Length: 294
Image (cartoon, rainbow, N blue to C red; front, side):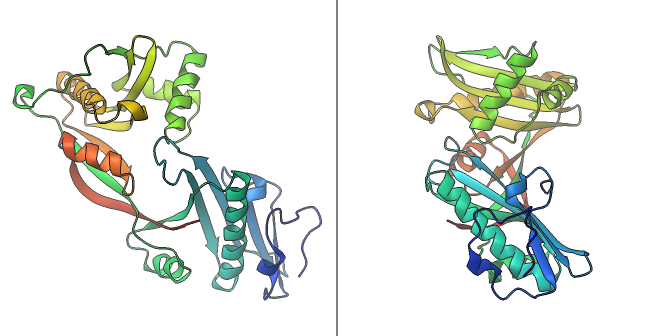
């Protein structure tokens, strides 16, 4: 099999290459696929130089969100049927290497699959992925009369304050906290754009100088979005997250926003319990998160 010298297979065992058709070449592209790193990206071309498959891995440590299995490795993969198994083998082997590079912490390798994509679902389940996990959509309706809803308050001695986002440094510090809890990584420019939206709330809870948690809500008059609510482990179960969501509802009520949308990973039990406790309604599974534990 012809493997370009300039693109060695970092972390991919030689057995992955066995059985590959002689008229295919698989290599690391010059640039990573999507936002993935080059060493975590693969491309397959046929003997005419036509691309017949590409895939990549992106990973993040989410110890505070999913402490039992903190390393998440997301796989993207698009390939011609004759190249699928080769590409899948390279990606899964590289996923094992990523796990080893992080000290062998428990990991989850997964890929997103649309609910109606039967072909993708069949392929990945045949390759050993399960469909137990999903990206779940919830909504919380804002009551016309908030007095009908039992109000949750932060624990005695704590205080909720608006996050100081006036400088780029402050905005980046806030985004790093969200990332540390499992939020999607965004640049400061993303947050600046959200701050200009009609619906925006960023609050933190402290006990003295000790940080406890955050909430970020964005959106427009027709719909608010709960981008993240997070609480330090030792403060969970004490009503902090519920109180922050109630503050968001008060803001929505003042601005006439009818509901708030939120997404949660099905296996994130703490988020699922919080949404149920706060009165969120489950709407649908937006996508399967087909995967397997490593």
